[in-house]
Length: 508
Image 1: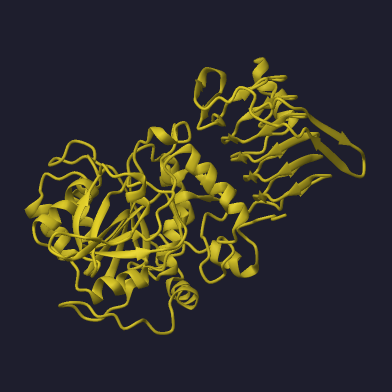
Image 2: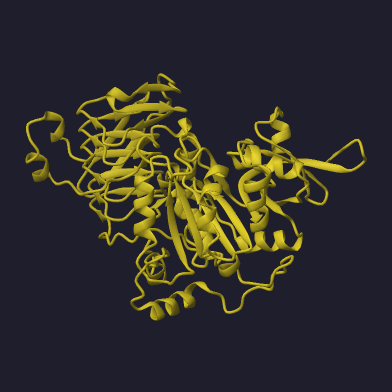
């Protein structure tokens, strides 16, 4: 059993409470800078060779540009009221925390987060999570919300358009490279290695590619790479077979040289001068980085290189991918590395309270109240309340924003549906489902009922639960849209909507 908390030790408590957003206040700045330097800044910076530039540490020479994510129907309804980067992951975190943490752990401390679509939750999280320490002008996470001006009266039309319209902000500091990052990917990467490779090869643009792409498509583009890792061609949605996409084996071209196809992750290192030239001179009408800027840079003769990455990487772009990423977080220990911690907002929640709960192969977030229940192979988010005789299997319970007690419910009025408390009611069964935030699950609710039977025998001292050997999804439903009833089915996974109310005795 894994009982996980973002404050898993005094060390990580200190780290979790570090904030990285620009502050106008200089109160205690010298002391705070000293504390941050002890934790984040290595004793000596690597000697990085830069073409036509001085050798500078990354916290002075590189700025990160992180995108919060746009509309994506494949993640709906998880993105109904939030952007992709704000989706909760692994009980205590948001997806964007993974990317921001990679930057901090790589000593890249000039971080701009560009947000637009359903950005309220994401903007609030970034501001609260990485603000308040007065770290000084040169170390920050700055949220740039979509805006209109006299020159540009529309919203951002794509990633390239957003960067072009924000260049006046990015040019405030004399950085030499921009690191462009999608904010909804889950991975751990040392950007120092990436920047070193970019500078060593004297490339104009470096693209991170996947050396093993068995489970990934080419949504961020497919690179044709030669034997020197030079990108000779870049296409979006190429008409390649699955074998082409999962193989990086070399092929011989007509000129006798070898090349291979490599999926892109959408992570780019671009020189400052090259970025300005592409956006303001060469491709002034381009709106998207992947489909227009990268192919345009190649056609204009710029040197575009590939940097291969062979670690865990998940593009959380669909409900199925989100479900898999959470299930993978149970099995792995990637969130438990003291040298590369995952940062998030400090919430000062109490420890989770557990009665006679039986919990196996699961992650439990902070501040949960778990009565006599069975939780198996699941992720349970913060402030979740699970009542007696509940069975939860292979599911994601996102959690709640508030605690709601029985007396609070009785004071709320006459509507019958309001009598159901936030959380999971007594004797409910949930299997292979995602229960979004603040959902109200009544008593004796069956979610993903099986053709077999589930029997729970409860005694004061122990739990015993028996499952029929022929457990399958009786109706085998893959896709269904029942928002009016509080849920949808995506890729065979039941998703209970945010703030949904599921009445007592419901069967889904």
